[in-house]
Image 1 (cartoon, protein in one colour):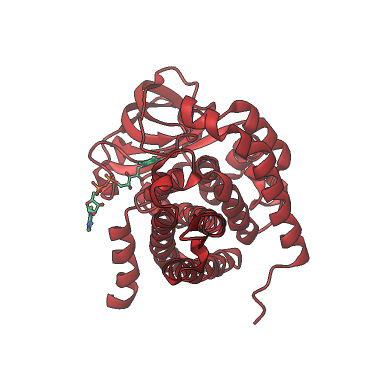
Image 2: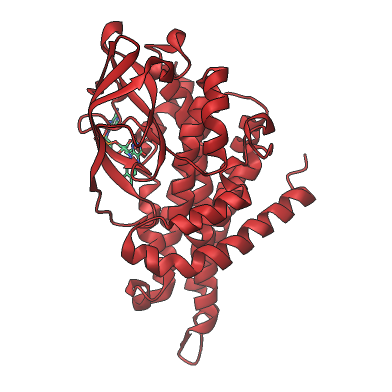
Length: 379
Ligand SMILES: Cc1cc2nc3c(=O)[nH]c(=O)nc-3n(C[C@H](O)[C@H](O)[C@H](O)COP(=O)(O)OP(=O)(O)OC[C@H]3O[C@@H](n4cnc5c(N)ncnc54)[C@H](O)[C@@H]3O)c2cc1C
């Protein structure tokens, strides 16, 4: 088996890296302080086609596969994970329409979402609903040719950015079963009163969403009438894609942590020699590089499985579990190599440590990933 990148993939990886270093890196300080996704950066990423990589050309996609998608996630997260997170979630809204939408919905929403003119959000979390997706309380009631939606969502990424939100709510007429509805974020009654004050991932906007008598046409039911009440199945099918994006983010952060540790170990002198000469530091770096190699291979293997149409429910759970742990350990180890300086915001490793923690939590906590992985064996 040949596991190497193709020439096109190497070129793509290099072009994303170049873009991230030239266009994202200089904005990190601004994003860390202003806690916003710069709209001008969105425009540049749109021009690069970043929102469209894994989608087919008929809807405005680039026509590449999920392998290129995780390569892109890795390279962006290597520089600044918030932007990869922002893109991953926008991609979840697009993927929901791409996989479940009617042909009319695909033609209507995907070109805008894939060219970055509209930013997507994916909303299921509520105050009582995190790991327990069935506990959703937001309601959708039919009134003539409209849906009337009421409720509150929390922790919704990109909800402050113009575009569409793939919203999960209880379909009152369908005995409260979950239905997904495409809601424009400028709809009357949609508001984001509170940005979440976060520990990290400051360049990714996350806010609570209030829906007060939001009216959208019934044509906005994702997948049309036949998909009403099937929101839970849609959620189960979509979360592996979100996890795959997070896996790419983990690999990127682990690589960034390793790069920073190697650089610092060669530069920092103690007892008259670089700390890289100490075996304790070599062990840390050796372990980091080993785990990173395994995390990258798992991510590429899961991305490949998705690209050839396999069900990745279990692989995505295992890969997300492992890669998030690798990113966490890599960030912690890189801090150890940096000693006291690791605790200073002058070095990137403290930010990577803060950002990496999220990967063990969002798109489903790691405990749930363990349960999914085990369920394949214990059925
Ligand atoms: C920065 C950020 C961005 C986010 N973006 C989005 C978004 O765009 N859209 C969206 O819908 N959501 C989003 N979320 C929400 C996120 O996906 C949920 O927070 C996550 O799924 C966990 O849910 P919870 O917080 O309710 O945890 P809970 O379900 O309350 O779990 C708490 C803990 O209880 C344990 N636990 C819970 N259930 C089980 C179980 N069945 N078995 C074993 N242990 C269990 C686990 O240890 C878990 O860590 C975001 C969250 C954050 C922090």
